[in-house]
Length: 198
Image 1 (tube, rainbow, N blue to C red):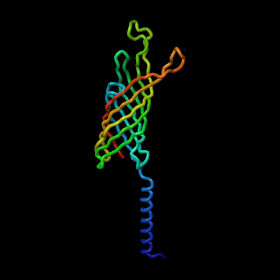
Image 2 (spheres, rainbow, N blue to C red):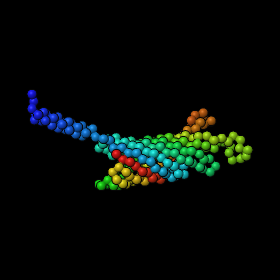
Image 3 (cartoon, helix red, strand yellow):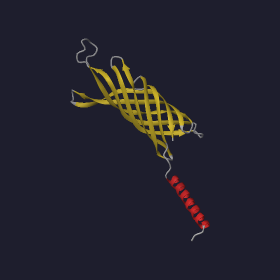
């Protein structure tokens, strides 16, 4: 029968093996950096205030490149065109670089997505009795990007950035009986966001 000293030695050996195995596994499969945030913006497609949420995950632990997504909602109001709700969703790649201390970082992204404008007035809406005037929802694709700075601690940061984008869609051309591309709107907006990093 094994003595108590032998049993203790075997237990210590098992514990050491488990710890080393766990450490090796952690080195082989590190956690991917992630972030989530929420903020407000002004300008953009709406020319008004809007709120948004954002989330991203790194493509690789050793690369400061993230796949990220943004969802924004607000209101829009343009004279002689109408006003209503505005919704924008985007996905893209975001690159981020930081100072040596990590207190300040810069970022830039290239994104594409979808945008909706509700209650857009179309037809004869300027002359009484407004026959043929109607309100529709316009939908378009967006292409653009974001750039700016974020600062703070390891997990909680504040980000300020600039949004630049263009929305485009298609409409039916009665002359050719085919959909024709058209420019829907341009956007330049300013965003302020609170970020949680991992």
